[in-house]
Image (cartoon, rainbow, N blue to C red; front, side):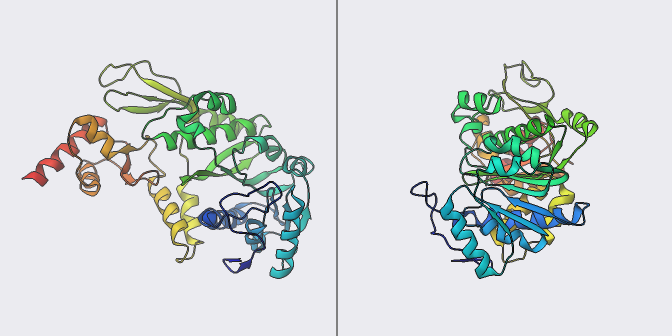
Length: 371
């Protein structure tokens, strides 16, 4: 097979049939597109004469192959010996030089303390198993990419599992995938902080069955302490749909006085850095359409903190039929509030406007369309 000009020696499948199979999922191409562009940008930011890169769970090796262009020393690892054979075939076919290892990802990362400037962890399932070793292996000036495919857990379908695995309470509402992403970021930050390293998200998104978090790692107790301000809770009113991200939990809604539900602890800051996402877009060819669309939407909503609203859900709460989204967005913008679409939902939008003004805008649009 071939992907973006690189030959791959593995079967196409959503997941391996058995443990010995080599895993290659062609549906994850937009993840790899975004990761390649993001790591390329990162390689230009890192202050080092040589860039050491580790793809800790290489499988077919395609992700690591795509990092070759901007890596001075590339390490491709997989615990599966069949995967190592596929990787070596791919390296030869693509004319790439790399160090290939056949070890548990945690072992290869732990053995290389503070070595790597770029680390990619792309497991089938949660990334929590690999966080400590990744924190050990990350250089004091580095970037780390983490993929998680257990979205149902922090999105609220398995509350006890989320509390056990992430130490956070989830909330299964219309914005549950954003809650999940914020729980993931908080978990990454918390684990790196234990090693006096600061993990700051630069590009994070949810797509299909997975979340992807790419962050910068710096070794600074002061910076880590400052970023603690970005950990807190999400308070949500199930009665009027008001929501807020704050350091402390709320007991009641500030609009209607109804009791609220809380999620967290989780990340309450920005989940992407627009200065970074704009550079990533510059590195993405126009033909990488799906990946570009994701980053464009993430870029457009990067500066707005308030969890997104789903238009259909709000209208249902108001007891009215839903108008089209674009006129509502335009009306809220006319009122002077920042607003954007969101990558989380085709009927969602993100704004810092007060909820009363949002509902008023919906009512005004419905009257204009009716008249």
